[in-house]
Every structure is written in C-alpha cells, then in structure tokens.
Length: 307
Image (cartoon, rainbow, N blue to C red):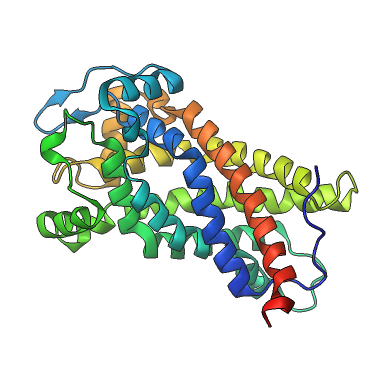
C-alpha cells in the first residue's frame, strides 16, 4: 500500500498548519477512548480533598473501558471530545504545523543538514507555544474525562462552554491555565520524543534507501516516535493529569503534586497508565502522521485546480 506521489512543490506554511490541525482531530476521533482510559488509570487511587481515596475499580486498559461502558454508558468514552477537538485545532496546528518552519529558522544559513540539537530546540519551542495557547482546552478535556457519571454528577458541567465559564468563575482565569508548567515540560519532552524522533527516523529510512516516502515509511516512523514519546513523557504526564484534575487547594503547585504521588504510590506511580498511554500515543501518532502527510500532499496537488 503506497500513498500519494510525493509532490514536487513543497507545501506552504499555511498548508502544514491546516493539515496538522485536521490530522490531530482525525487522530483524536480514532483514539479518544484510549486517552480517557489513560486519564482514569492515572488518577486512580488519588487522595482527594476531603481526605478520601477512590476505590481501585479499574484493571488495565480493556478493563477500564469495559467498566466505563457498563457503569456509565458508551458515551462516557468520548466525554470531553469537544474540548479535545478544540485543543487539536490550535495545539496540533502550532506544535506540528510550525515545526518545519521553526526548524529552518534555527538552522544556520548554509548548513547542509539540520543537526539533532536544532531539531530538539524547534520541538521544544513549538510545543511550549502550543501549550500556552491551548491550555484551557486541555484543562476542560481532562476534567470531563476524569468525571465519573453519575458518581461525580454534582461536579459535572452542562457543556464545554459552561465548563470554561464555571472554571473561570470559581477558580479565576488562572484556573484555565492550571498545570501549564508541567504541561509545557510534558510537551517539550513529547515533542522531542515524537516530532524529532519521527523526523530522524523518516530521514534515516529515506537516506538509507530502506523505504520510499510512502505510507509504510510514515507508519514505521510514527510508531517508533509514539513509543519513544511514551517512555520519556509518562512521568510528567501523570503529574500533569493529577494536577489539572485537582480541586482548588489540593496541591500548592506541580512539585507538591509530584511529591504527594511519590509518597503515596512510590516511583512506579509515575508510570501509572503506561499501557494505555502507549496504545494511545502509538496509535495517535500513526493516524496523525499518516493523515498529516497525505493531507499536505492532497492540498499541494489540489492547489493548481483552486488557483
């Protein structure tokens, strides 16, 4: 199975920006239940205010998904999807769509190849900017995913817009940017493990002539990028999820959330939800990067007809 023929004319920045946002939404639609399972497993057993500990009711990825469907209905698997799609339209567009442009900006003039350090810097830059712009959507998404109906019905929001309003009213505007620092750290790591790994793997496969620039090449590079990103980013992801979902005053800051996690669960707590994280990131990367590459090429091929 091969993809569209690689275009001779490179896609514009606007094409990359739009393609990345669309590809992110497609990937979220395909993998959102796995992301919800990951969030539930990451916050499982967390001590809340008032001092209560939720029962250990989830066992593994498929056990979590089946328990949610049985107790909350199938719709619970997609709770927070609207905020998730809003997030991808801004987040993926910036961190993925602008990556090549920022990489070129950081590459010294006259350089034949872009070194790894430059790629890492570009990944960190676009990841940080994307988080700063899209953080409120991430907070709302996590709140919906973590809310268990009907157990948390008193805390449920009537809708996505109501969630933004309620959080801003009850926790202040800063509440919408809760967990920004750990999220920036997480996405800097993920960008380096994801975008840079994909970039390097794809270049290596093409330069070594092991594969041509087609869907199979994109699949292999994306799968490797997803595994790399999961390994390096899981600890920060667990802290980010717990901190975003915390009630006001539960943790002083992200560091206190990390310390509480280590005291309660030990170092292994940093890898809670690793399997769904990998299933989600691995599959998300495959769907996103394959979609992203094909959407770019489709737009380039369609440009003469639209001119």
